[in-house]
Image (cartoon, rainbow, N blue to C red; front, side, top):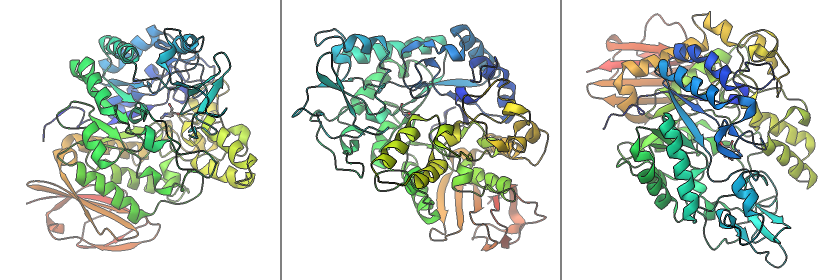
Length: 559
Ligand code: NOJ
């Protein structure tokens, strides 16, 4: 397998708004990130993925961009950006930018022009359609509730917005759009950035027929078959690769809603004609409903193992995997798959981390995951800031589909805001994130879960992550070894091996809160194994083990 730095790296995602506020306005900023560069160096990560820092009216916290080559005022200036980039590079840390080009903000000058008249030179930069029988051109639902079409009175036509009404979709069919996007990407690359995380990049090519989608419970139709992995998406990415990506040494990861294994092999093909890797969603969707994520369902471990193992084995040698439990769109994994009570919080956080970081692929850590940050005890709709959550609350409760008290529980469990509360740096007021009033509430558990406390304590979740990252650097088998799942039907244990001759790794994770017996499989002789890591003290490894609640360990054997 060809060796690449991005296969051997660990990526850390920063959501700048919530990471560190350097000027007391309650909003994280670029200078705040620069201040914490030594923290990231100490953790040992190689790459930062920076969620959007561009100028934006913040309808969707920066995922609605009004100037791709300017910095959001609340985050600082381009000089601050350059200082942050230099501070990262000085420490050997690379910076990957978020590239949001499925849509812009409606305040982007292209859209401001586009909506002016039907013959404006920018008209065709976006997707405009005539009304159909006086209504929207089709029944597609927006991701953020309601119709995906908005009527614009100036020209009596509709424009497409798969996300909010302030996020009109760009028309990638238009070669001027592609050229402008590629020019902008080249500009950033020449500045010295090290890659792109591409927002919903699987959605840039739409089915030109714009057919109605299957009806969802909200009464709107499902756009996915006509938007995800659309007819020209690979052509566009190959063009982007020729015009930009192939000219630099970058990490590229495509956020690919609706991606299948077959599609992933194309997006992340080993010939390097498109991207390095994709984010797939199948494991995150296992607790989703028929047509919406709003429920309290738990992920079933047997299904989780089947899904992750399918990606591990089917992409092996054909495309590269990304590995993640958390990001700014997901609730905290500890409250979703682990146990966030005081008794087991740290133990289960370490188990989840081990399970993911010993797999094949490039691991992504989302800010605060390395401390075992948890979901947030939100108590009313006023506590939420996320447009998806707030709109969904109104849509589901106002059409009578869901009772307000039920919807509030679903939000508390699944809302993206669970990931977006401030990074917990210390037990000081404002969690050490800000001296001012934070833009979103701080999780009250910051007095016990915070970086300062964990950095001072050897057995903390922070130090456990630090060690996992170090192990990946010390053992090639963790990066390149072949993966095999054991005990696929076991409802409590996730056990797998990695093989890179002459070494073999055994990864044991007890996902349950009960003790469980386990016998080492063939090829793992207790006298001949090294325990690389684990979350309980154990004097020795025996062939028959009684695993403690949420216990994990990694055993290395050489033949
Ligand atoms: C995916 C991003 O991760 C999410 O935060 C955003 O709301 C949508 N794309 C729209 O840009």
